[in-house]
Length: 211
Image (cartoon, rainbow, N blue to C red; front, side):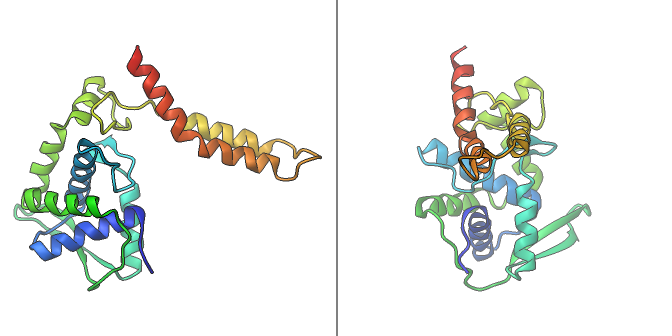
């Protein structure tokens, strides 16, 4: 099985870390992957992790990473172990256990991941957290003083969160009676709402930037 998207990005980072002798815990995984996405955007590329980064308690994070971690552990690709760090604090480490997991990942992003791990992998989780707080997306989020905002990796103000409104639209669409002359019209409407969500977010962001 070939892994794609966020799973592939996580595996690529852990593969580079293993080859470089870098220990990775949950915090380091998130921060290194965020820094790789940020560097990709700064170089004019698309962020390769597929993660929607938000400002959480320890800086940029996404709950998707925990779900991916569970899937990879269940598949026997990653070993997740609870241990303690140098200071005696509990931490959860992730280690790639398979030799050659198959991943489909952008070649340039893979190079960026390798460079980030090489340059920043030996930093502690706390040092990486502090470093991410100094990046432009996190600086802008802190100006607003609101956690959970979606970070703009280009360094602009965080994007407005339209997901609650989209969920309401989906619920309304799915409860509407089916049209007699077109079977599946309601389902199509719900799919259209999902498909256009990112465009609406980008458009809203552009309008806000213009204010």
